[in-house]
Image 1 (cartoon, rainbow, N blue to C red):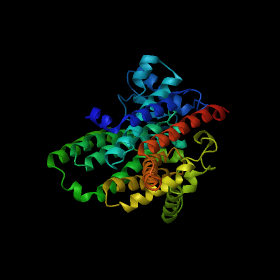
Image 2: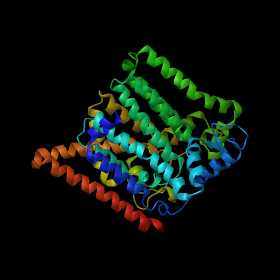
Image 3: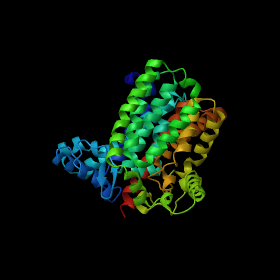
Image 4: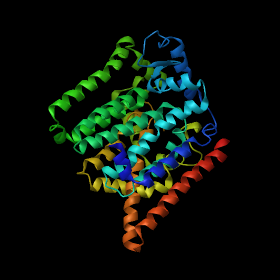
Length: 402
C-alpha cells in the first residue's frame, strides 16, 4: 500500500518532500517576477469553458484541445484549472499553485523509484536533487503546461518500472499517465512515442510473458484513451500541419529530405550536449532561464556523469536501462522545431535520478574511505542539499525579482 511504501521510505523522504513543496510555494507570485500570458491563458480558457456550457470556441462539447490564440495546443492544463477556478476565481497564486501541487508527483515518484528499483538507502536524495535543478526550480513555479507534462511523464516511468518489478497491473496507471502527458504538451507526444518504442524493444522478452487478461485490458484502455485524439484529428485534420507552420518548423521548408534529417539530428544532439545543460546559454529566451545558472546545476555534473557510468555498467537491469532511454528520448520532441528548455524539460527526470545515483555511490565510497558513521554522513548530506534548496529560493526572490 501507499502507506507502507511511504513508511519504508523513511522520515528523510517525507521531510525532503516538505522542503520541496515549501521552496515551490513560498512567495509563489514573486518568482518568476512575470505572470506570463501562457500562464494566464490556462484559467482564462477554463473560465470561458464554464461560461460557454463546457464547450470550446468551436462549440465542441468537452473538447480534446482548446484554441490558444492561433493553434490548438492546450488540453489537460485547462481542465485541471476548472475546479480551482470555480472555487477561487481568477487568481495568480491558484493558477500557479495547481501545477505546483502536480509537480510534487515527480518528486514522490523519483524518491520511491530510488528506493524500490535502485535499492538505495537514501530516497530523499532523488527528491532534493530534482528540487535544485534550476530548470525545474523555475518552471515548476509557473503555470506553463511543460512542467505538468513532465510530472505526468515521471509517473509514467515510475509505474512502468513497477510493472517491470513483476506488477503487471501497474501497466494501467502507466498508460493513463502516458496519455495525460501526451495530451498536455505537444512536444511530449514524440518523447512518449520514442520512450515507449525503446522500452518495448528493451524489455521485449518480459512483455511476451504478460498475462493475456492484462494485455487485453491494457490494449482496451489504450484504445479508449486514443479516442479523444482521433475525434480531434477528424474534426481538425490540418491542425498538426498548422501547428508546425506556426512554430516555423524546418520540416515544412522547401529543402531536401536529407537536409531536414540532418537538421533534426543536429538539434537532437544539441539537446544532449552537456554545455547546453550545465552552463548558461544564449539559446533560450530570458524568461525560461534562471539567471546565471545552467539548466542543470553545474555542481551536479560529476555526480550525473558517474550516474551515467553506473547505468551503462548495469545496463542489463531494466531500471538502469529505463533511465538511459529517458535521456535518449528527452530531446526528440524539441528537435522537430528547435532546441528549447520548455520542449526538452523532460531531461530533468533522468538527470535527477542519475545524479542521485552518483551521489549515493560517492557517499558509499566516503564511508569506506573515511569510516565515518553512516548517519552522520547522511544527515550532513541532507542538510547540505536542503540548505542549497533554500539558498536558491533566496537567490530567486532577490536577484530574480529584477
